[in-house]
Length: 246
Image 1 (cartoon, rainbow, N blue to C red):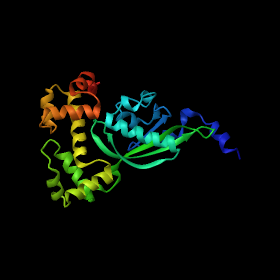
Image 2 (cartoon, rainbow, N blue to C red):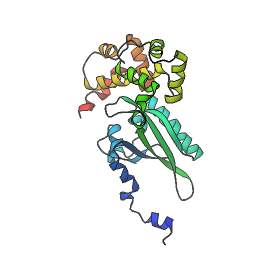
Image 3 (cartoon, helix red, strand yellow):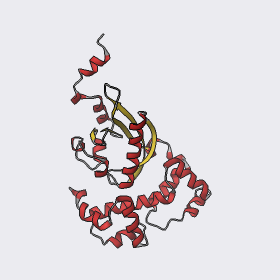
Image 4 (tube, rainbow, N blue to C red):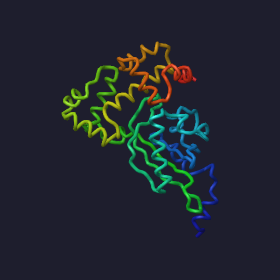
């Protein structure tokens, strides 16, 4: 029998095992080098990144594709894989849908080694957390669904907790344990990304977008927007307006 290393070396990289993920549209697959450049991925991942094809992913970095707060989380996890040379499993994090809205996903990342045993990159898969689990039967996901359905309204955390049978402290703890974010932070992130979609596709005044997305204080909207995405709503609109229809 031919040695495994020899057999693997003879494989044509254009026909890698990663092509299997093209038949799994619910699974997002990606590969990065040590410097954070995306080397390849499947079509489903490309579309979530706003790219027309997997080929268009080549050489892109997270900060050109995702909101700042997502980028910071992704980079911390990547750095841990490179530092420890160990996989990271069951990472619960926000990842954008094709519409640019935040969705809770579970991510697995594993290191890639060269023949010297050095970590030269990583590969990973991302799946919708809410679709993977029977979340409709879990109280915390009922809270999430309520927030997503009523994001534009005034949301009172203690009232929501009571409505779903939690104390405020219990609900806060469950959110942090499950998602790594408080209910308030989840609400802010959801509203900001919905605002992004409106800024990219519409011409309503920024103050109107803020109100439509649940921000009743214009200055608060601008402050949170800049904190999460690194730019003002006006600068974001000037840079991204019309991209959703391209």
